Length: 147
Picture 1 (cartoon, rainbow, N blue to C red):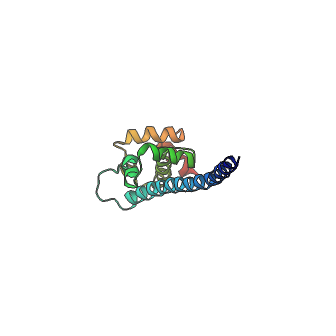
Picture 2 (spheres, rainbow, N blue to C red):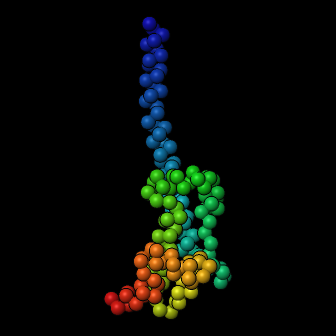
């Protein structure tokens, strides 16, 4: 009988440790998700604001995950659990914000904006912009300029 009591006490002690470990794991997972988000944002901003050369920027999520020491699948899962969408969707959202800012400035052509944001050509950028906003970059520029 005494052995059962000791075993019960040991099991209860282990049970109390589990939530602490889970909270610690969740904190690490949240930290990784935040690092991914901040790195994506700063990498894109740096590439746009301080381009090294005239070639288009390419941000590899796989390379980013590798640089912080986690696998791409694990990083994607952590990010999605923390924010509700994938790192690629987040990067697209950041690009959309930059595209809208740049379209407000008539000195930037659609081709220049496309290249700056890492698209291989203006037509690919235009198709993507239309998916995001349901209007072409040219239409967006005209509507925003009127307001």
